[in-house]
Length: 303
Image (cartoon, rainbow, N blue to C red; front, side, top):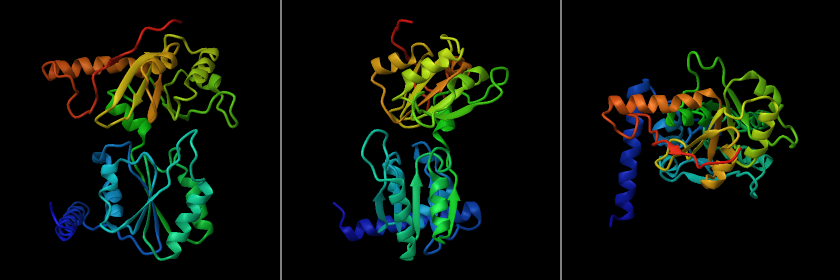
């Protein structure tokens, strides 16, 4: 077993190597000033999808205020000695309020710390990044935004579902999974009439109600739909079904958050892409470089 001193030296070596690699790739590493807050997207899960600037922030931060869905391997990249502050919010569970998170960021910055606000996906895609920036600006705290790969696009790619496909769709809709009767709910009938793919963030809890609203809006019951759980990670699961059956199939298969849902004809192209990849790779079960799992057959359901 290595001593603390040896472990510290090893960690310092990794940090130095990371800084050198960033400098070689970018020409310089972006400076993280004391008293500054960086809002950073950590991507959908896989550490390989971090941006170089996200890594630069992790290597310099004094405190990392992170969400629940940030992968532990990403957190492990933080500078040795950095304070790790959990600020996770999970639907339906007690959690810190957004006002308290913003107040924490301001308080840390006013102590002269380099504050990294680390969010899953992209901070500006259902990540409340805009709210936090407004709070920082009101307090006179300088900030920087580092975009991340959003789960609604990275998760689709990892499951071999193209967000856009020539001849299939001309747009894609990113929506939060509020139920039809919730305050601030989306006009699902209007979205159904677009006939463009819909990607739902945080949509499992209300999936049955949303599917029903889309059906009432005129979207055919046979419209392909899929749930992607733990997107981009080793335990990723993909369930392919139809709009009429997706909610019941997800329950039967015990799918749970974190998950995204995609509804639309682009889902149909998944099997075509997997078949093409398998043929090229001599019947391999994983599309090269995609991280996509084998198709998971959906349980039978009744219309």
